[in-house]
Image (tube, rainbow, N blue to C red; front, side):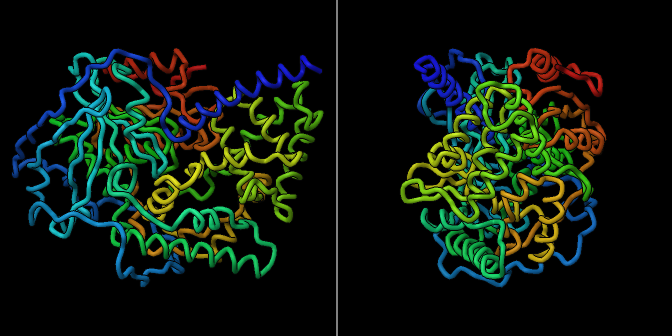
Length: 550
């Protein structure tokens, strides 16, 4: 018995370490090697390059956004959104525009200041690129200098949407890719940029803890009312910012940053949602794409039959169940089906009987989110999931709730910006077909993902949002140089099929497959993947399409 206690303690320590890595990876902050980094001087002024008004203009696509091909709208479009809801006195304050047109944004200098071993700066971008005189917002960025910087900036994005990129650049570390200065920026609405604000912690706890699998009309009404109030709270706090959080606007900001840092072409590495940022950039600015790596690609098609994220997590849960059934210390069942049945019964039981954790509760949807936290990683996280689930099944649910908090962006006392920026950006980018359609879609997902879709439930945040959505561009990046798309066969959050379809849809897409598990591959330590990506970024060596690493 003493031996068992020691082993369990060791396994839990390993699981905690893995879980920390998972949290960084899920939030796009994994990677990096410790390096000696140059310490910048207290302040360095980087003058803006000149702009030839007859040539390409920073942030302005050669082909206007409205002239790009879009996927057909499904009708009705955003029928239940609260588009007439207004905020009389929003908390988020906007800056005065530096000029009546874009010239004031193009000509600003970048004032780099020391932030630890790195350099940080804040620049202004238009709130509305089509009306630059209206107001400006702040974009914060961090530069991690390489030892020589000979290749210029490599912009990096961790995904989300809603996560800032500064920590991602810091986590990768100097000289992660030889000769590049890594630049992570906090996209509009996130991090230290002008951020989305919503309700207080107690109000946000209430909405994230809602019963997402309503069993009767009363529970359906409570769910709809909760997301209705959440959307209003976000408008009350954030005001007009909510109308300008699309990825289209984000990549126009990115092109301005590229210009201000003196780069003729954008070299870029994006993970998860960061692949959508890269693909949209390549669509709007194909002539300015340098070397671009898109890892853990999201779906950019209009195919209703594509594999959903819920199905991806269902696959990952089955892989865990198969491991558990063969592992002596995992006692949830003797075969995969028995393990899945045990987990499903536990999660379903929380619908009627959530577990108290201090002054909070572990609900059905929060518990499912906590399980998903571990499934972002590969089998190294399985022991941790085993012990956390086992404890929760015995009524000790604090660790599983903490895992859910990691994914939801909840700290010990308050929520991080991602809890608000994630839905705000998601709803700005993609249209919905209303509350009734959302329930119908949830029913279809339950048949394909009987554990995850059933217990995660339905959220109606976009269906009741207070801002409209952008046109859904058909992304082909015509005229762009080769773009490296990386997909992992066992990726839970962005199923492998999404990488295949992205590489096919982008005219210059090249697919690199990692045959393994986990969300993303480039920073995962696989030597083959590292060699292929490094050779592409550093030497410009484009791999053969459909190269596979194991």
